[in-house]
Image (cartoon, rainbow, N blue to C red):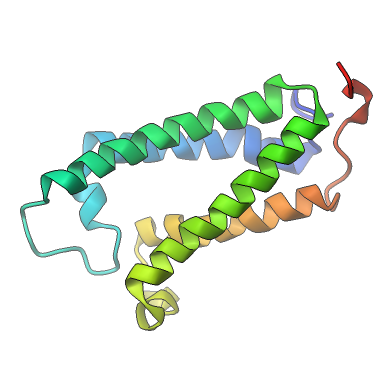
Length: 155
C-alpha cells in the first residue's frame, strides 16, 4: 500500500495524485477559455474567430467530465479499499483511453495523427498522455509495479 491507497507506489502517484491534478487543469482550460480549448484540438488552430455554440457547449461538457473523472480516480484508487473496485476502474478507464486516442485519429486522419513533431500541447494531452496512461493502467493490472494491497479484500 502506497501514498494512502491500495496501489503500489508508482500507480498510486500517477492515478491518485497526478492524473486528478491534470484533469483539474483540463477542466480549467475547458471552462475558462472554451474557444481556445476547442480551437487547439488540432495542430493548426482554426483561423476562425467564431467558435460555434455547440462546440462551446461541448467544451464545458468535457470540462465537467474531467472533474467527474478526477473524482472517480480518487474514489476508486484512494478511498476504496477493495482491489476489485480499483482494478475494475483501471480496466474501464484503460478502454476509454483507447477511445480518446481513436477519436483524435478518426478526425485528424493518419497523415496528421502520425506527425508527432507537429503536435501542440493539447494534442500531446489527447494522444500522448492518453497512451502513456493506458500503458501504465495495463501494466498496473498485470502487476508490473507490484500487487494491489489484498489485505482489505472483502471489507
